[in-house]
Image (cartoon, rainbow, N blue to C red; front, side):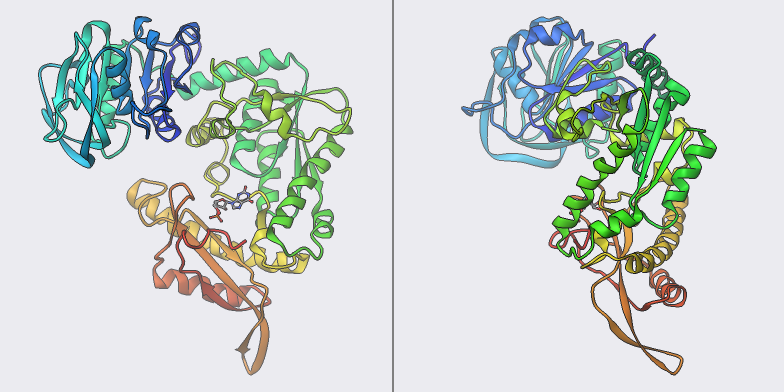
Amino acid sequence: MTAHDQLVLVLDFGAQYGQLIARRVRDLHVYSEIIPCDTPAQEIAALNPDALILSGGPASVYADDAPDVDEKIFELGIPVLGFCYGQQIMAVKLGGSVGHTEIGEYGHTCLHVQGESQLFAGTPREQQVWMSHRDAVSVVPEGFAVTSTTDVCPVASMECAERRLYATQFHPEVRHTPYGNDLLGNFLFKICGLKPSWTMEGIIEQKVAEIREQTKGEKVILALSGGVDSAVAAALVHRAVGDKLTCIFVNHGLLRKGEPESVEQVFTEQFGIPLIHVHAERRYADLLKGVVDPEEKRRRIGGEFWKVFFEEAQRMDGVKYLAQGTIYPDIIESGARKTGGKASTIKSHHNLIPFPDGVHFDLVEPLDHFFKDEVRALGTALGLPDEIVYRQPFPGPGLAIRIIGEVTLDKLEILKNADAVVREELDAYNAKLFAETGERNSEHSCWQYFAVLPDIRSVGVMGDERTYQRPVIIRAVESSDAMTADWAKLPYEVLARISGRIVAEVPGINRVAYDITSKPPATIEWE
Ligand code: XMP
């Protein structure tokens, strides 16, 4: 049995919601993928899905450029569940109608369940749901029953149980709909008869088989960056091909204190993976000499990486494959959507890798259908330590964009030492909150925290001596997606300990400042 012998396809009418729905379905241990809403019914049928979910979306169904759906999907005999726009388009396509209301309905709303719908089985007759719409179904299609209402919305949900077509005006996929998961579970398990069989063990087993089938005993290389995705890809590919895998770790000297050692230790000692540690610290320092513009730093660092990598890779004989930790959001965001689940290689990603002339490797991208939190769960299941799996987000250009102005080896040393103190103290602070709440990113925990070295000096006094050294800035933010962030309201005693330790332990620093700006208007990074 494969890990996803069941497939739920989410037809996406507005990307934001599509991703969320697929994640909720996967959280219930059923495999789900997102496809564009206008995928022809014939193509959908060829994928042999067990259920379809029509997502919400920002448009009005009657708008000229409204996202459309092939109405033949309703004749495939596959159960369909529509949310918001998904309900409206289902209604319109099947002969009902949608009206435009002036007031709309936004936020928490009280829902009144009517009749006996399997969708609402085991949930209260009155329940809170999350609404966000102006248009709403005014006439349900023939054969449909209204299964719930709100004070504003006469068709808050509808169904034709006989044809297994269900829809809600509200959004069960968001956390603000407390019984949303129950409704989704009712649809998947009671209505579609699916089983919660998509488990980590099953996923690993399937991916291992796919990687073996693709690589057929040939050699594979992989670029380890120190980040979560490449680490999990390495552990997974290693599980599949053993020592046919060699990892190349390009150490640009811009990782945080202790990270290169930790990468080397985990992969060589724990996993026993052949690892080439390329010491490119000086090469990068030379490359960054005199560069102060942040974008220029990014360009140089990004461009150099593949050069160093391929120089090393070309020294190896007989390598056929390059494994990469591309994850599902990278694919969705790059627009290179593919369906079908099984080992689909994303061709357009080839273009992103600057293969030198005459060099080519086929790509192995075993994580290309996983969301970030699934990648983490996979990492844990494969035995990677928490320090790698739950590593906080870290920019590709690394510490180079946390040193304002020119990057030098001296400044890097100072920043690494100051940053290590910030990390140690705030790791402990986060761990305490995790122990209290059971949540890794609870209300007050820090999402990202680090030190920044500005390009200025400050006067201080140590003993009887006047000092003229560097200040360091602490940045610690609360966030869930890095799109917006608030500065962390850290307890004074935590800030005091960080400040005291940095000036005592890090030579060259005589002042500590705390950045109290949210994003927007500031960004998380300083450059
Ligand atoms: P900002 O500073 O824009 O950062 O608020 C948002 C998130 O993106 C990370 N970041 C980067 N990540 N390359 C990366 O891989 C970059 O050049 C880069 N710049 C910012 C940042 O750490 C935060 O998590």
